[in-house]
Length: 56
Image 1 (tube, rainbow, N blue to C red):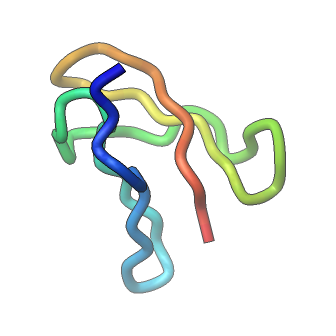
Image 2 (cartoon, rainbow, N blue to C red):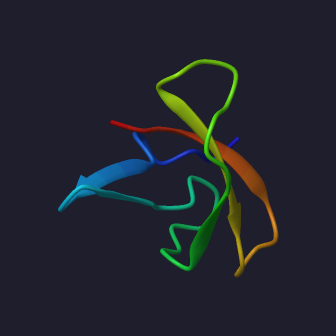
Image 3 (tube, one colour):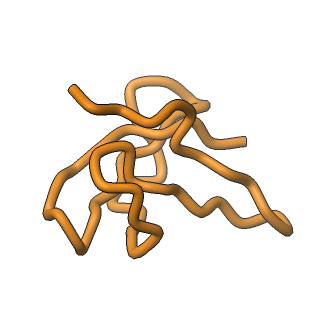
């Protein structure tokens, strides 16, 4: 799959996610809640892939 480890980084109370497919930080949180309380759905603007990331 080409995943690059943990895609989420929490900084200053906000969550930024790095795309696990291309490594881009040009991502946007699509849904504040994913399948569980600690996961959110994100979208990468560079490679157009949705992905799930851990949130704090």
